[in-house]
Amino acid sequence: MKAFTHKKTDKIDSEFIAQFALNKMVQPSRVFAKNQREFRSYVRLRLTLVEKRTDLKNEAHSILASEMLHLKDVLTDIFGKNGRIILSGISSGKSVDQIIASLSPTVHKNMVR
Image (cartoon, rainbow, N blue to C red; front, side, top):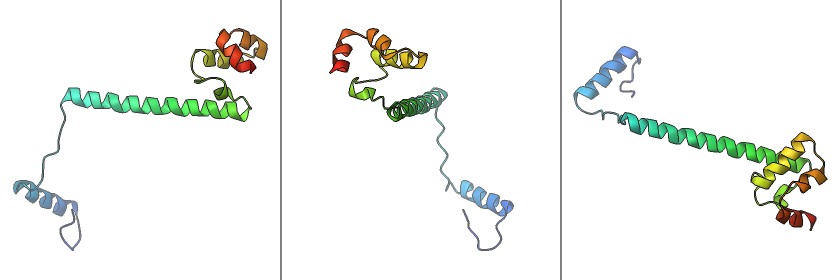
């Protein structure tokens, strides 16, 4: 809100803004009701958490791909029930045979192909 060509100071700025307000040239800012502010805050928080979850899943896919474990070729969702069983088996140091034995029979068929 620069109005003058000479030196700009806080006092000149405050007088200029006060003149605008007195002449009804400044629109009041919109303040939402408390329940609406809380709801908007929850929506923003949820968005942040979903983005973080997606980042972590992408990081897990990247780590598995770098280790040549392409589970996405066998499973539709590596974070589903069977995917979590495989991931927990890998992290606990189980052998591949032990991990496969703990999976459902439909996954056995897809992994053997």
